[in-house]
Length: 200
Ligand code: MMA
Ligand code: CA
Image (cartoon, rainbow, N blue to C red; front, side, top):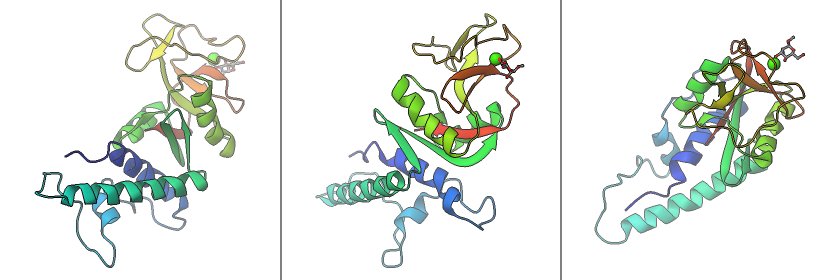
């Protein structure tokens, strides 16, 4: 019996955005994989359930309970505008900034990947955070071996682009891509401090 596929996703999102609203808490307050915290409460101190099938309906009940709690969690995150969504893809930010490499790493560590828009809807979902924090964000797009040509981080070619006029401009010198506050893209050096936006 499998846990609901969106479980790891929403937990990752929740713990990525939680520091966002935890004012006054020291950095690193939140453990990296704090799954247990989520399932333990005052009345029920049990740990995350084992995924090994159990006889009877216990698993189904657990899954229904998890689905219910996930949907409530998603509702709260969406209501508070802590996540945006487009076509089932969830985008989230911690509100912190980092250079390109650190952004890629941070997003991986929390179980996602750096935000990579595949269409105007996804671009807008990322843009929401860029505008809210008034800080450009790096995208999951990098120059290929051909200077001035850009591709996804896995090497696949881009099927959607939203370059600002006359961008990409550098023809080799700027290997990363940033999103401006109007949602257009600029090729840029990778060492700027930009808003961390991840996708899940
Ligand atoms: C900067 C830098 C470039 C961008 C140009 C646009 C001067 O360089 O941000 O990436 O293309 O501005 O004028
Ligand atoms: Ca440029």
